Image (tube, rainbow, N blue to C red; front, side, top):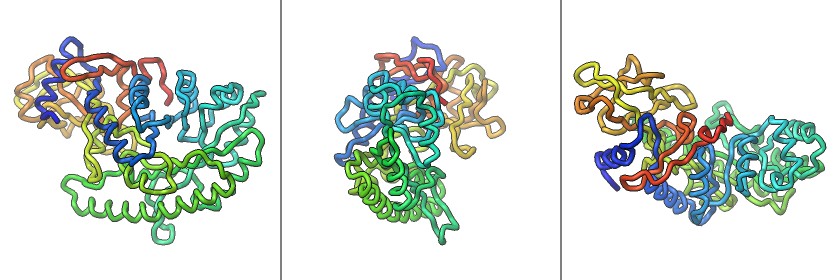
Length: 400
């Protein structure tokens, strides 16, 4: 692995002919991260979370590698677009209220065969049926298990508020409801343990909190493994030919893959390795997706100003949702201004070595959200840009 200084020199050389702001993906790092996900999955296929990639060229690249199979999408419109583009196995990870999209799905045998939709409430089945507009294709359905950890008799909840289906009995009941309804077929079960997969357990300078997170995650994994196994048995008692059980995320690949009940793993952020994945003890990835902002001002000693850069990530607002100045190392935000919409002051001794027009390289807090800011990703190998790939935005697609 190259040193940060060597990487900075490579990226500067590779993009010297381009004007910043710009975004790159280091293909060597991307491929190494893909290999690491496959290794950690221990022989179970990895389904790629498209929201963490948002670039068809890179989705095609990773799905061409052994160990990867299928896409986990985030909106119905995206799912249909990907299916029309030739992706044959698309699992929509979130329920949808897109009536026009459901009308298209129910009317097209190719789309209906390629796309599986998420359901956790009979009312969603009603919405789909009202949207059919005469389309008679069978709709493939996945049920979602609530993975949250409940403590102290349910008074404390740890985990995302997603599905209302928590018990094996609730999942089996909905499986029976779907199976009894003409035009629908249960094919899968999903559970995303975000409180394990998406929360770092080695926070810099916070050893007590890090230990508390590790204790919580250990308890959560144990509880969920038992409950998920029971849920799968309950659903299979209704749907013996269940095609898949999806679980996990970048931060929990090897732990989730160890569960016999799980047949495939979901992951996507681990391909780009944004800054939120720096705080994990379970794996180390290589930063693959970066963006560069040009220096446009030198306000004083130890200060430079770059153009733009205020690209916060989703989630609870806080400093950890901001991009981080990455190269050259040693730059930091001005606490009075932070990351600005049109300009961002950066402090630190490396500022004195930067000239007008030089680049500062940043890492985004989350993975695919970077692609909502740029219409292209310049694909770097060594010290050359070997190709330029449009993001979803570059193809005129903004699904959320």
